[in-house]
Length: 209
Image (tube, rainbow, N blue to C red; front, side, top):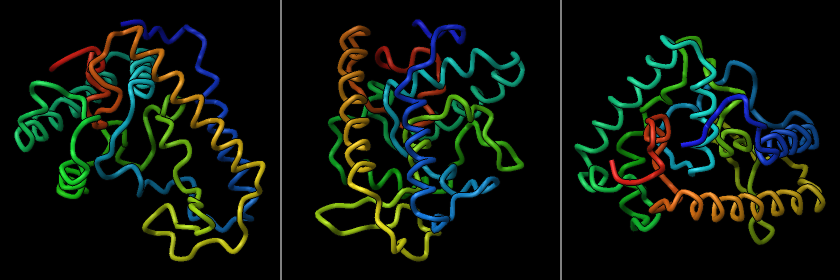
């Protein structure tokens, strides 16, 4: 698996973080996202093999003991998940799971913290965080209806994002899909999506557990 921390970073991750900052600024401080808030760092959610590649790059940049501690947390969590969903033992990918199965597991483990979450609420791999983490907090706009993106977001911002920012959001999503397809083909991976703890395990994106 090629995840050298000295390799050039994916511009997709940097562009997504930049888009979030501009979108947040456009909403004039109506988002609850603040330094020290780690609410969205607790709970199970899917990530992609692109995210896994970035997480692995980040892990390799850490001191050995710190990396091992994070990997051990992830391994323990993966064992718990596999006990609840034995199909994860055979195949870590959840692309073809029925939505209800994924939703049930996510709900059951809603208190599971990200393996990279520190006791002070900081992220050990902030510079290498998944795309979902980089865009979380911006309300979605579907068919003209705006929905809050976070459970602690008590109200939807009155200001809506500009069409240009929404178009850029769509372009980023398209670029993600294209890069996912390329990476899956390159690795001959069995899928594109896996649950967060598995992305911290070596070779998690290359095949069965």
